[in-house]
Image 1 (cartoon, one colour):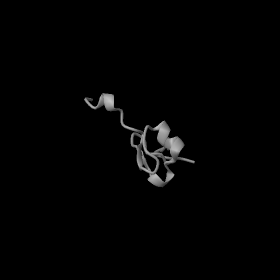
Image 2: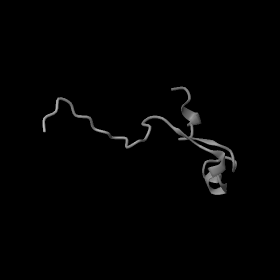
Image 3: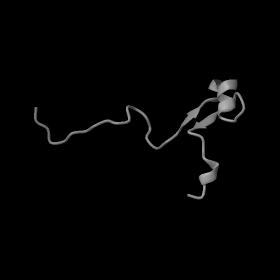
Length: 55
C-alpha cells in the first residue's frame, strides 16, 4: 500500500488540553468530598488551580 500522508490518532476521542463537565446528578458524596465541593453540584474537570491564575 502506498500513501502520501499518514495520520496518527493519539487522543483516542479525548479532548487534549481541554476539560469536561461532570453533571451534578453524578456528583455524589465521595466525589464531592474529593473535589472539595457539594454533592449535586456540577463540576468542571480538571478543577482550576487557584494558585496559578496569574499565568
